[in-house]
Structures are given as C-alpha cells and as structure tokens.
Amino acid sequence: MSFPRYPAYKDSGIEWLGEVPSHWAVLRLGQIGRLSKGNGGTKQDETDAGVPCVRYGDLYTTHRYFIRGSRSCISPERAPDYTSIQCGDVLFAASGETIEEIGKSAVNLLESEAVCGGDVIVLRPTATVEPLFLGFALDSPEANAQKAGMGRGFTVVHIYADQLRTLGIAFPSLSEQSAIGAFLDRETAKIDALVAEYRTLIELLKEKRQAVISHAVTEGLDPTVPMKDSGVEWLGEVPGHWRVVPLKYLVAFRSGGTPSKENMDYWDGDVPWASAKDLKAEILGDTTDHITEYAIASGAADLVPAGSVLVVVRGMILARTFPVAVTAVPMAINQDLKALVSPTELAFRFLARCLQASSEESSRRIDEAGHGTKALRMDVWTSIEFPVPPIPEQEELVTFLDYETAKLDALVSEADQAITLLQERRTALISAAVTGKVDVRALVQQEAA
Image (tube, rainbow, N blue to C red):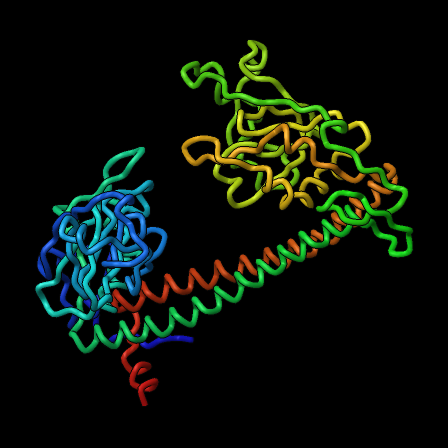
C-alpha cells in the first residue's frame, strides 16, 4: 500500500528527523513535560496481587510502546516506597546492556494506581499530547538513534534525565496525533497478529521435527519389523534386533576449559574454541571465539577431534533447550560443554540424533547448580539408555533424517524471513508516520466511516 505525502515540508533541524511537514512543531522532551528518576525496592517486594509495578527490565521484556498491564505487583504497604505513575506518563529504562536499546520506553495506559521501580526515568507531560502518538514516536527509529547517542558506559549502559530532555520529536496538532496514533495502533496490531501466526507455525514445525527424529531413532524405518519392549520409558518399544545400552558404555567424555583471559598469547588465534553460544548449528565448522596454537601447546586447552558430539552441560540455556552439535573440525571447548568422543557402537551422526531425541529425558536430569545456573547431573545423565541399531541401519537413518529435517528447516527459515519482513514493515511504518513522511489522516477517516 502506498501512502500520500503532506503538501509541504521543512527542515526539522535535527539530523535524525530530517524534513517534517511544514505545519508540525519540533520540540524537545523538556518542553513538553518533566523528567524525574524513579525510586523503588527490589524484586523481593513482588506479590501476586496488589499495586501494579513496572520495573526497568520490563521495558525490555514485557512492554512494547505501551504499558497495558503489569508483570508483577507489590503490596499496598510497600507502594509508598516506589514512584507513583499516572496514565499518560512515559517510562524510560535508565540502564541496559547495549547502546542500541538504551532508553527503551513505553507510555503507561493503566488508569488504576500503579508504580515504577528504580532505574526508570519518568516523563510526565505538562503539555496536552496524545499518548498513542507519544508511545510510537518515543520508541521510533529516529528517537532510538538519538537515545543511542546519549548512552554512556560499556558493560552497563546508562542514560540520564538531563540527556533525555534534549531528545527532539516532531509534533503535529492534537487531532493529527490522535489520527496517527489510531492508525499505527490498528496497523501494528494487524502485523503483530501475523507475526504471532508465523511464530505458532514455527513452533509446530519444530515439534514436527522433534517427532520425526524421535520416531526414527526409536522405531526405525521399517513398520513391519518385529518390536520389543526396551524396558526404558523414553524409548518404549524398539525393533527386536536393536540393542539398548547406557550412554556411558558407548562413548568417552572429554571436558573443556577456558585459557586465562589475562594471557593474550592464548587468544585471537586460528583454533576454534566452542561455547554454548556456538551450538546453534548441528554441524559446527567454526566458532565465534578462537584461541592460539600456543594455548594448545602449553596445555591451557585441549583439542577434541572432528566427529565429536558436543552437548551443553552447564548454563541457563539448559532452561530452554538441549543443544547438540557435531564438530566438523578439531576444536577446543569451554567448561560448559562436554565432548562425546570415540563412540564404540554408534555412528557419531546417529549419536547426535539420539541425543536430540532424548532432549526431554535429558532435561529431567538437570538441576540448579548454584546462583540459579542449570547443570546436567552427569552421573545420572550418562546412565540414560540409548538404542543401538546395526551400523548400516544407523547410516540409513541418518540419511533419512538429514533429508526430512532439511525440508522442515527450510519451512522454518521461510517463516523466519516472513517475520523479519513484517517487523521491518512495522518499523518503517512507525518511522514514516511519526515523522510525517506519509499522511495517514484520510485513511483513519475512511476506517471510521
């Protein structure tokens, strides 16, 4: 859909805004309201019911453009220790992990009593503005680029009220603000609904993928073959000629470690060094981080051979998934991984598929390991029993699964691309509307009629 433009434009005087409609005003946040720092307690104050509370982290994880509900509450007795917020207030995250997302904001649309915690900057408009317009305008690419230029810090990035006072926004009349806000609220809701549908499709495809792998490695490909009870709950019945053996008797286990970060002679070399973040691909040919040959020669790290099967044994990633990868080249691994090497009766690619199929069973063998970190209980996990078909049958199963999972992965990739395009369209639409690059007033009138 193409949109009309306004008849005349002027230079906004702000690099990130560019030209804006000639009848729009360009104002700094300090001209439309008061900014102040929020105060509050800790997460230990949270209760299931009480006064709705918005914390700075919620602006990154829960609220997008607007606060229409709260993730948590605090008791009425603790509420006076927090900063009270009103409907129409804008909340900014005062700290974050990246420059690009610092100052993430949302407009409070709650009409009931509500509060915010610390590390939040609150803008209370003193001028009459349309909350819907303000929500989209203050989290638009143009506003975010200005906030990124204000961010300070490395490990933790901060932004301050004095900086936000200088943030420039283009303001049309109140009636135009209302029209733009209503248009974007309607159109972004449509886009978000499509994104949700694609995400549901992706989850279904991933479930189908897991089911295909599980069926193949536990029941084989021949539906006429005689079956037997494996005696193992997660396996159920398996082909009668297959063996069932605990993992610890099928492979050797190799641990990893991290060379000293203080010795720069160990780092930025040519040797791949794998960590949990690298296990996004099933075949691992390279890694994000690398160490030097000197680190290997000095004993600061060891290589595991190509054909090793890597699993994550420690880390918060285990709360979400159980990643498995096969090394295509020799590499070192960190302490959060285990390498399964020298399989005696299993082809390494079939072993990897078995580990994928056992992800739910493996997850049952994960415990908290201090400070909320997840970790495999290795002695219990290595006792999981795995199916052992004849090697030729394993190779046939791997070929079949490579073909079937590739088809499903292609569909997931198409859905991911569709989501990316929809999100880009949403961003572009917001940007164009709140800076006046397009005139949506007539569209709103048509919708109302």
